[in-house]
Length: 71
Image (cartoon, rainbow, N blue to C red):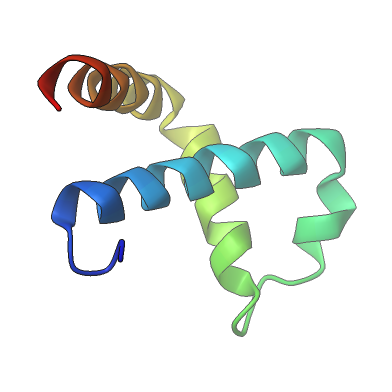
């Protein structure tokens, strides 16, 4: 399970951030109408992916290197 393995949890969170940012770039109204509540998590992930995109990109590269060559 991804909850009990720290590296898997980080991978899931990173993929969630990247996916939400991509969805918001294609259809902004889909995530913008749910800024609060449980679905607001996806809006927050999209904002993190947009504002911190260089850091997210570096994390993606490091995670890919880790998955491909360390395991």
